[in-house]
Amino acid sequence: MTRRGPFMQILNRVKAVCAGAGVIVVLTPEFQGTHLSGAIRWVGGRPVIQLSLRHKSDDHFWFTFFHEAGHVLTSPRRGEFIDAADIESFVDSDADEEVANRFARDCLLPPHEYQEFVDAGDLSASAIRVFAQAQQVAPGIVVGRLQRDDKVLRSHLNDLRSRFVGRPTRGDLRRARAARRNRGTRTGPRSVRPDVDLANTAIIEWNGVQPL
Image 1 (cartoon, helix red, strand yellow):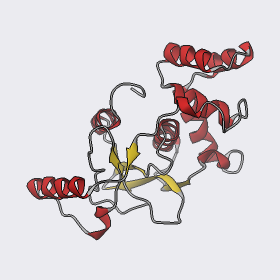
Image 2 (cartoon, one colour):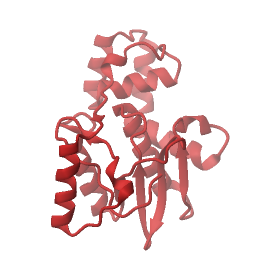
Image 3 (cartoon, helix red, strand yellow):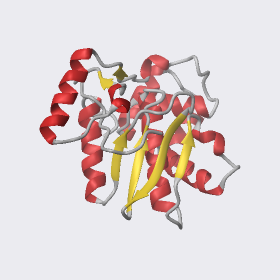
Image 4 (tube, one colour):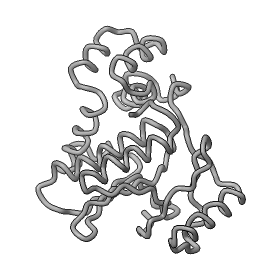
């Protein structure tokens, strides 16, 4: 799912799968200066995964999604978690965050296969593409993991990562407001600055959930 089709199509599939399990997934703009990537809330007894798309890259989006999903699936309590831009900075400092980090890492790249790939010593772009295809993930996810593990410099191989959103045009905003009116959904001043998918110019949904 991490490498199939335009981003908004993938997102809609993620939301549908999660909704089938009783989990709500929404994209919401962050408050300026908060540097937040994701959060978990419980609304009416249902978990809500909020994602801010702060870094707008495929590896960061998927890690954040699975990190927040990890909170839902592994936390023994229905707590609310608000996670900073560098989620993995929580390693060893908070047990819940470390469990969620491990859940996300292992969901995206099985630990045994990943370690074998690293031990093989070929971290070239072509080798990463082959490994990513074998694991059925986007190459950017492998690059992001290698960078976080200090296996490659953070300035290297970034052409394999996807950045999939941009700022909306006025036309995009007009279409979004019209679509919301047709659906009977309230729009407010905070909902006029979300990002849009470059491929589909689809406005990120507000869904009445407070911003991060």
